[in-house]
Image 1 (cartoon, helix red, strand yellow):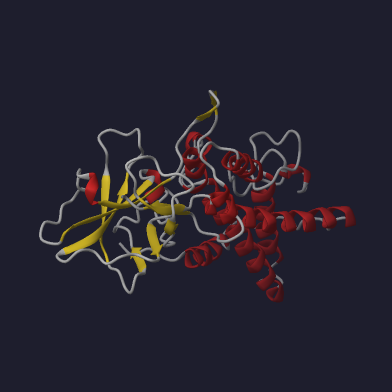
Image 2 (spheres, rainbow, N blue to C red):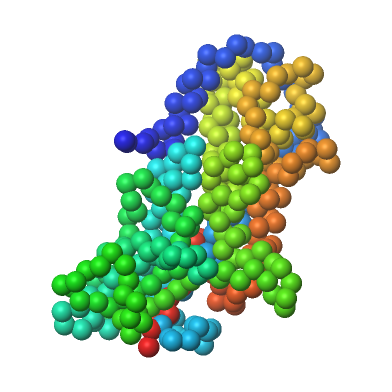
Length: 344
């Protein structure tokens, strides 16, 4: 089934919104309120940037595989990162981080009659292990530029996988699972999964990444599908849609429609507990985001996306297994990725 791109979906929703019963115009904002709103939109832009930074900590670094656990001293030969196709579904996490890109350098050609094969693996503590075959990985003059386009359901790969393995196996006997013979394992990467440090419990890197990029307990309890960063960016897109459609309606002097779009914007920014301070008394809630974009008042109720994302980013940078290399990704790229080691 074909799915429209997000911007097309937004445009369609704007058209449907025109049928809602008109409401009175909002009163003009005071200078203090205008300054407050300007600060909120600056804050939105800042959070979008930090959402992308947080995704970068999901990098998988590819190392030459060893029999022992790979350490920071192993030579990094490449990295892999998750990509979103954008084929989103509001009722699921599909279309988000549903593709994988592998980039490697200084890779030897496989032996004659053999090829490299990539596999995404389930978590280390999951039994039995689940393996997703990603096809043969070609080498071109010592470099690998490989993209896995995902499946037809646009399945979120971070939901059920956290490790990446590249094996060297015969082209005549292609299996649906990686060989159990570790001598065929050539490159390996994983997202850190330790949940304690110095004997004290601590959120794991993998847990925080899944909360950001797939789904966490807070959103799950509210029936919201998709990770914190996905919902934050989608809701920000909704606000932009409503603002632009209100602006474009000014030439028609459709004040009732402009009013509705402004109220929707405030509903998403403030949440139902705090929005009444920004609209005339008795103004009905037009949309309920369940979680507001921003923290505006002590009695706002549930935390905002701003707070929830900030909490997960703090967990990430202090989680067990985070290395200086991972922290360096904060300033070098904006895609969730992983690092690979090479089996020896």
